[in-house]
Length: 515
Image (cartoon, rainbow, N blue to C red; front, top):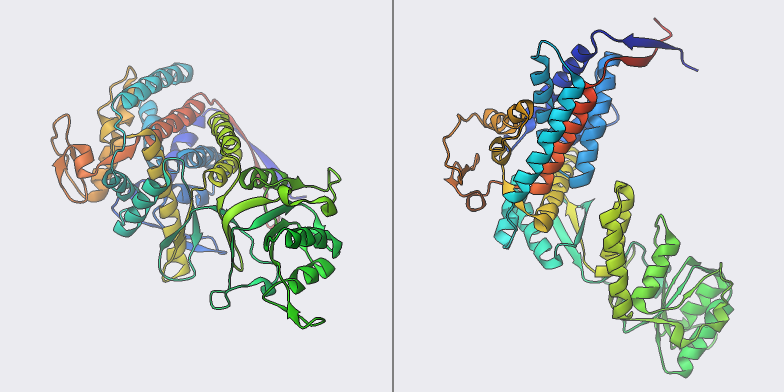
């Protein structure tokens, strides 16, 4: 076990807090806005050149253990803000830094009094922001939101177009592209991250895929091994003149797999010299944190009965009426898509409402994402942005920026926007002098990063710091999602309240045996 030394800080606690916050935020704040200022991160195992505030915060550390403890505390709050709304981390940290420095200017600090002042001011901020919120009505307005989050015309076009196609509850995921191009895939159906079990199930060798029209779908968590596991339903389908079967199962192997293949019209049976009649394509149950829930969802969506090992269901008892239906099934090497599943609409609608309610009530971000993925399965609204770049470092940095833009566009589309560039915050007046001053800093920092002097604007005007156009904020594209600003101020006030009411620190420092 490594030896540790306990460090106790008492009289100079706030000095440690101020020093740590300033060192951290001074590195991050030049990246605020579209100035393209970046930070080089070299952690040995990876290197990045990025302008993403939350990622810089994740990697920021200080040598002094007392100051580093403050950094860890601030980092946790910054990451929670990013997980909640996907953006606004840097603005939140700038507000936090200003609050701490404003408090430090006081000759005597009453932490409890400051906390109450800040929290009262926060409620006033929320009311004023919500009162000035405008709803997104056009694709062009949504594109302007994306451009604020990430100044890239191509990405902004992709995001605006995709969300208008998918709707406010659409799910967009982000993956690495195997090429240098960034593009989006929209799957109008249920996407499963598993492909065909055997290449003998391919119907189109050129595209290396299987396409099954109007398939019957067997759902089971069994591993199909024996011939009888599959033969019974095949015989029933032949008798009923049904010839297309999709099997989603734990796995299909040995005699069961051989039986499925030799009965395929695309394979000649060596024993009879003739092709089979039933085309079967099998895929494994996709990896999921809750496979049982996923299989139940698929059963509801396709109208299938789920045959499970836990209930003791027997595969030889499967009837055609137990099989699900879909308009088409496309199966590739690593993915499958069920197009227009034929489950009962009433049951699917009830499930969607139930999941939406659960999302609204869920406070755990990882569980909320699982529920959102379930919602995407039910609403059949799935899109995937594949991010490409010439180098791996550029790809990583671009992926972070695209993630921020995706989240900004999503929350803006759902709950509306306010004037951006820190201007909405700078116009707010609360009962807290400390918070009022802190709310001025994001706009000031943005002007500093862009090398601009302050511009006198009318109440309904904004200035686009990139184009220098002045006008109404929606017209000139100076936009922030209201959820992002509220989450950012909440985060800053929350962590500031903890810090200003902290009167001491107890830190365990690991001692280097060489010392």
